[in-house]
Image 1 (cartoon, rainbow, N blue to C red):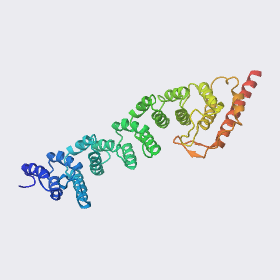
Image 2 (cartoon, one colour; image 1 turned 180 degrees about the horizontal axis):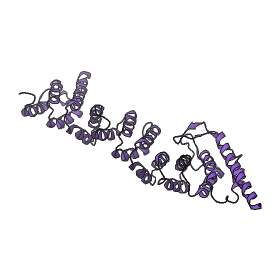
Image 3 (cartoon, rainbow, N blue to C red; image 1 turned 135 degrees about the vertical axis):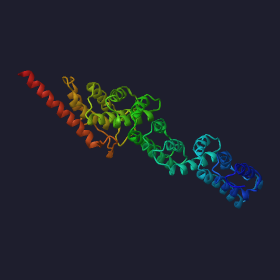
Image 4 (tube, rainbow, N blue to C red; image 1 turned 90 degrees about the vertical axis):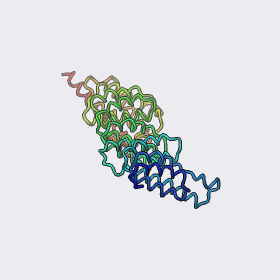
Length: 360
């Protein structure tokens, strides 16, 4: 029978079960040339092929052939050229068999490599690859998803904000970068929702994204998180987001409350969460926030604010190496002291101006 004869597929599928294991690779290769959807299911089954004919004791040569058969099945599915292959592989990702899931991922990777980034099916493949066992494959899938500009990528990327596997910090940072550069209007809405997530990594990541891409609608959300969040790691993320918004010209509605909250953190003996985020521990971020928010006061200066800041100028803040943050701001211990000194000088100048006006 010719390879395009419908009966050929039925015959070859039967031969997968009937032929001795050393003939199976040839049968699989023949199936790949049929371009027939009926070959997909049997080929997926071959992803977890085991040589039962050889018995329990497999020699090295037999094991080599078993691996060859599984690889042939991957090659066949990747080259079958039928549109149903992608959907079948995404479905196979839910299999309880590790071999099936791993094989399906490899097929999707091969099929996806030949697709343009704006192919609608590409997004489905990349989302599936977020489940890859290798962190580097996950990282690449995240980077590629950011270039799709597709709303379907948002939810899976948000889920990556709480990734706890190998190289978790790098994966979460890539997810933040991807969400910030995705360029879809639904990103801000999704981040506003994610700020309420019970997972602190997700809340922190969402705030950092909002600091980069959020507009006026995001500012109240960031400010509320800064004022109400109890988890120090998230507070730092909110502080960095506020700083980014201020540097982009945003108007802060509650400067007094924000400065008071920052000062309370600076006055505390310990941070609420002993960690760094983008090179900025809690006290460093708070000092920079005080410096940047003080000039935004539009009413009379809060009584005693100058004294509070002055008292903190000589505060023993731990040395932290200088890092660049995703908001474009760089912090180190010297800048912390300078931030407070600048805030003090600005307040002193404004207080003197107010005194002179009142004496006229």
